Image 1 (cartoon, one colour):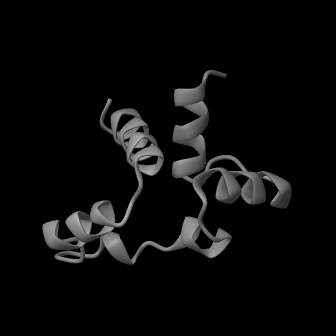
Image 2 (cartoon, helix red, strand yellow):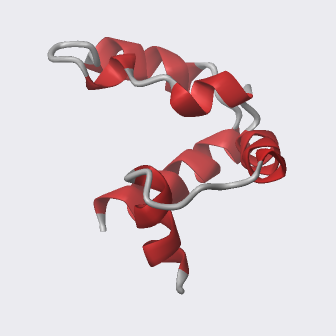
Length: 76
């Protein structure tokens, strides 16, 4: 299974991951585990451009590069 297939299965809840995997993913993204399961942003009108701009303004160059990698992977 390639990375894109793995991401699809995880995103759609088709594959159960161990607690260790979630810990590793959260550490790599530098977020708390609970943030991996927060879906409030999916509600209509929940995400605003201003919020995204504020988040980006607080990110250093390394985090901005990581964000770009994630965005590219998601929109492909």
